[in-house]
Length: 338
Ligand code: PEP
Ligand code: MN
Image 1 (cartoon, rainbow, N blue to C red):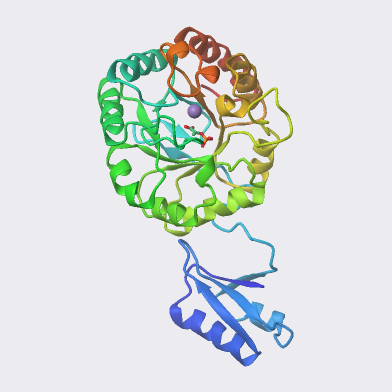
Image 2: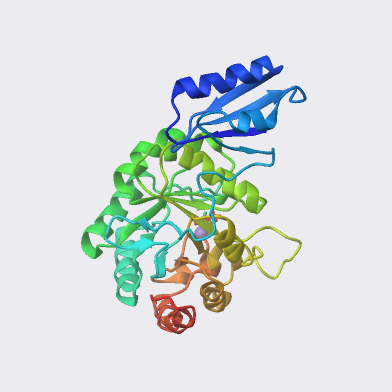
């Protein structure tokens, strides 16, 4: 059982609830929230009078166990949160935002040429990994801070917002100095300390779904960030692992309208990691827009054949222009703009 306190409740009100729980033979664990505190009821609940608790001053509601989504939850009539990217663009409003760029930042020429190309085609933000989460420790791990500096140069030149991944708690402040949006990757979706650390920053967070995570686990990971006071969370569906082998991951697009139903957080789709194959990226981008995605994140490289990481899923600039050019029609059908 979880007691959700009213946003205006004082420590005294919360203390009184904990006292009542003790008298009923249970314990209370107080979780300080961004908007409101909650009290998890621990131990024996048989001796508790639920309706008495529900009627105590400043108790908003009583929830049963079952992993509630509080900070990100959607009530009927609520609109999606509109997350500012720092350069005037937003994700979550009527306009669909496209984030594009290479898997990894390789060189200044590579990132600048790619940034200019994606900007011209209509992207609102530049992606690029400076710290790379690689499956093998024997492969390129990213240029680190030097990669962040190159991204900052690309922002200076193009005005694109910078989206880049942070993997370690002790790197959060460094990455936040350069990035406009902090990306938490699929491998780290369950890293609750990292989630809390990015939640303490005043930069938006792009949270990618763990490839083995359920929708509920995905939303609860977002709650970890929001509880620290950072409500600017953008969810990203990037495919889940199944038995299928013709794609790198299975892009679970049904999550998009389902998240729209239960959560106020915007959700974007990554068809690059979601398929692993360049020729599937454009059709799946259009499918993502058709099912209600608030944006896309696409891997684009000025010369995909020479890409150091994820070459098989990278679009070249011409392919990206074609994708972006065709996306408007799908957006229009969904009463959105690009
Ligand atoms: C990425 O976007 O660079 C990345 C590593 O993706 P994911 O975390 O989804 O695997
Ligand atoms: Mn990649």
